[in-house]
Amino acid sequence: MKCGVVTFPGSNCNHDMMYALGNILGQEVVELWHKDTDTEDCELIVLPGGFSYGDYLRSGAIARFSPVMESVITHAKNGGLLLGICNGFQILCESGLLPGALLHNNNQKFICKNVYLKPVSKTAAFTKNIDHNKSYKIPIAHGEGRYYADENTIKKLIKNDQILFQYCDEKGHVSSELNPNGSVQNIAGIANAGKNVMGMMPHPERAVDALLGNQDGVPLFESLLSLAKV
Image (tube, rainbow, N blue to C red):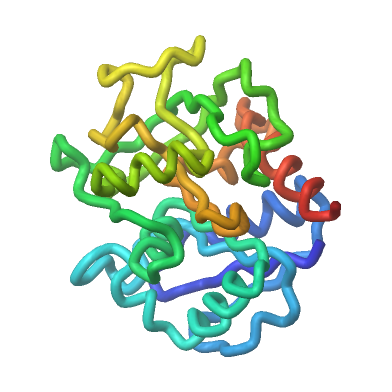
């Protein structure tokens, strides 16, 4: 699959994502620049983590207006696969491609640590083909990762099977004590109604290499890539 990873001023996880998709997953990967308007016929576009435009105004608020985003939005509206990780998730929400918003962590501090994720959606590409009886250890690194949406939006997300992951413990138990940032319903990631646009705060691209002692991110990418071929 041809994958495009967008680089914004301040992106710092773009090369991690390119390594994961190219070196670990064996996909064709191209780097897309924020000033480009051509997505080069990529089947999957990824908005990586980082601090686009210094996180001024709000995280993702300026990146949403980058020239490349017009083509990215068209790609998504045409049913193309689009994945946003951390800052990329924030950009997707700012762009209106995903509902809700990412607010400051409830402790008002930057959090960098490993967490466990419980897969929820059985229809979204990122989670459909993974073991739902397993929890996945994936690192987080964010200051504005508290997912928020109004009550009606949350009900729609649940009804339409759009919640990708919830923060949990090693055994998959979900509770408020295991919520690292105060996200409503312990939500760590969501998809749009069409399930082709997906965003999450944790970094699966940092959990793909045996040399780092964690490969829990690999099944997530494999699920995404295998279902995209169908």
